[in-house]
Length: 184
Image 1: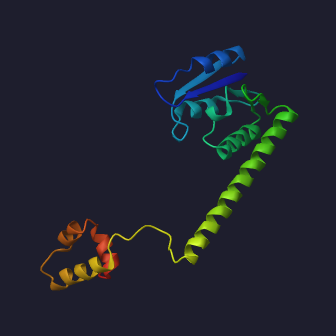
Image 2: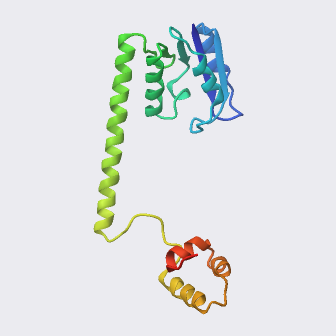
């Protein structure tokens, strides 16, 4: 059975174009969703994936309607393949049930892995260059050295509660404990 999945990112967009294309592709059932691609909670996609059986084919209008990223798309199509479910994208004319469709997907997978490796290399090179210039990574400190001296002096007297000092410096009590070296 051919089952379609259509998604638009915002409520002001319409599913008409995708719905028409999926009907033309002879999808017996079409799952429709208004959800951002970055949103991990897509209940209609989950329902669609659960409904697929061995021998079925999932059809989308475009690849980006199904996956948030190329890696996500490859993972989804791999899961479908393991279950004996085919996958087709109408716009890109990809059908994983054909040898050429499988080849295209393997090429996409290799390109995605290559891209991840390049990003990792650039990130590591950037961090190394920043360290060579004396910069450290991570979040900026909430309390400067001057602030820490003031906090220590305030807490040493014992007259001012920790919660008051924390509020004055706009930090949590645990931040004070961690930075000043006192126990709660």
